[in-house]
Length: 247
Ligand code: UGY
Ligand code: MN
Image 1 (cartoon, rainbow, N blue to C red):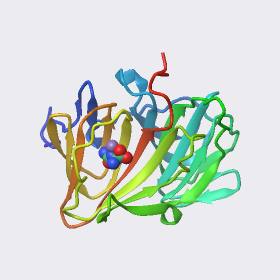
Image 2 (image 1 turned 120 degrees about the vertical axis):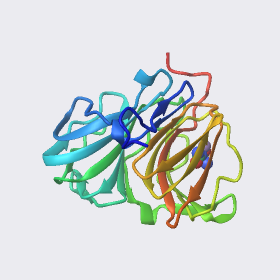
Image 3 (image 1 turned 135 degrees about the horizontal axis):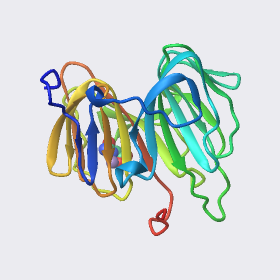
């Protein structure tokens, strides 16, 4: 479809969005040097309470710490990056809590997926710490007992953390077991494979490179199709009182 002029799979609705790569326009937030990138999900869409963007590193790629009060998760899609002296290779990640002054750098041609959120302090709970890890070492489980839909959880799940970033791997034909509708919102990056995503009342063919935003309460369902596994990396807000919505 996208090789036909004037056409795209991109669709932005009140409670969800599909952003296909053919529509990407360079737009990095301040603080990055030696890189280009595109902000794919942000509060500017009227709804999201977080930011999701892609970075393609050039020579000398480096990022200033996230703005005050903002937490950042960096997932390496390809190539190499580093936080201080900790090297991250493909499928490595670093979670930097608010106030973490770690120096983030990436080698030329590295591709990074970034999630950023204004951290919400929870009375009586401590602050989260920096987490650096690799997908292959993360805790992984069959989703609701299905060994063909494996969910890896990258971050600790205790109440200090107000965001989760997970990686879902589906064998072809595997599916979410029911249409989910929940208070948490999602930002999703299709990392490999393809399938069909139901978002609200619409069904979208999706494939590697696509981005999806799902608002709180957007009914959602996925099935993987084709010959290879479908893998998506996704964000969700967790562990906070829904009465405390940011103004
Ligand atoms: O964590 C989740 O809510 C997940 N099962 N949602 C999704 O994959 N759309
Ligand atoms: Mn969900």
